Image (cartoon, rainbow, N blue to C red; front, side, top):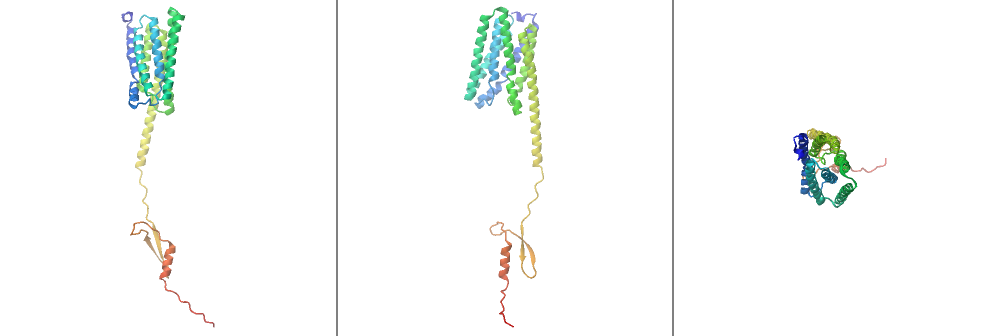
Length: 297
C-alpha cells in the first residue's frame, strides 16, 4: 500500500499516532458509562456529544471510501468510532428517563436520515473530485459540531461551578488527537482534515483551562470552609450559667436579708418562692394585736 512507502514516513507516523490517541478519545467516557450501568441512571449526562460523534464517524467513513488512495488510517479509526459510539448510545437509551430517551431517539433518527441524504445525494449529484470536495467540507462542518458539542458540558460547568460532568481525560485526549490529525492533514495536503482540527485544538485547550480554574477554585473554597469550621470548634466555651438565688426577707423590726438557693431537695426541681408567700408566712407568725376598747373622755 502506498501509505507504507518510505516516501510517506510522516504520513504514517502522524496517522498511526492519530489512531492511537483517537482510540483513547473514544474510550475516555468508558468510566462514565460503567458508572451509569452501576447506578442504572444517566446521572444528568447528555447524549448529544455521542450522537454527533457517531454522525461524524459515519461521514468520515464515507469520505475515506470515495476518496480512495492512502485513507486506510481514516477508515480504521472511524470504523472503531462508529462501533464505540453506537455502544455508548445503546447504554444511554437503556438507562435514560422516558423524556431523555425520547430526545435521544429523535436525535439519532435525524443523524441517520442526514447520513442517508448526504451519501445518496452526493453520489448521484456529483462526480469524481467534486464529490470528494463536497463530502469533505460537509465533514469539516460536522467535525466542528463534534468539537463544539462538549460546549453544552462547558455551560453546565460554568452554571454549577463544578467539573463533575467534564472529565479531564477526555479534554486532554481531544487536544492531542486534534494535534496529530492536524499534522496528518498537513502531511497529505488534505485541507478537509486540517481545518477542523485547528478548531479542535483551541477548544481542547479552552476546556482544560476551564477545568483547572473551577477545580482549584473549588479546592480553595473547601479548604477555607474547613479552616472556618476548625476555628469554630476551637473557640472558647461560653461562661457557666450562675445559679438563681432568691432573697428571704424577714419582716421584723430588724430586717435581715439571707440568700437562699431555690433547689427543692425532694423532687430535685427548681422552684421559685414569691415575695407574697413570704409576707403571708411572716404575718402568720406575728402575735395577734388586741384592739383596746374606746373610752370616751
